[in-house]
Image (cartoon, rainbow over all chains, first blue to last red; front, side, top):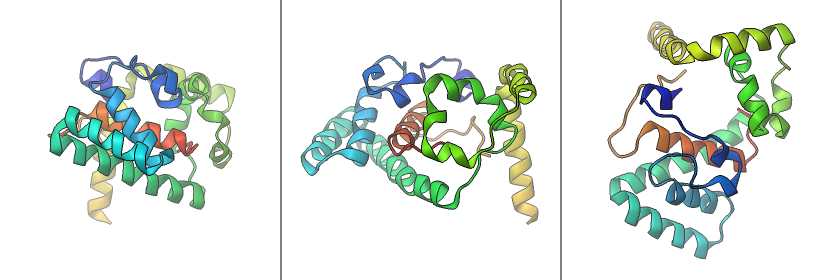
Length: 149
Length: 31
């Protein structure tokens, strides 16, 4: 959705398939993916190498932002999995096809989200082209709700 | 829900989501 809003299209397979790195269409994606990989799985030597490459490609500000995102999601996935957060509606229905295509439904934590019925899956496919309009609207509602609380 | 139009200066939204998505996938996080 964010790619569409930026007027671009990205290949999402790079998220789940390391062999697809370089084909997503995101600037400096090889350095960003190598940094993400090293943060999660790398030994100290690999992490140092990925840090150096990312710093050279992105500059200090970009590198710090990338490291912050990687670190934050290392923390966030543990909380999401440990607390068993399900995927919100209508995002579960809208993302059903994409999740199946990328193999995300095979992850263990997928069990926390009830399966999408055939009728809602169809509705999700119908709504998917409008996600670029729905998500900003939902974000606005979310902000308003948070301010009131 | 985060507004996908939100921007930062250092990285584009797509770059942030690529890093976030890969870290999540490596941890097999569905959410």
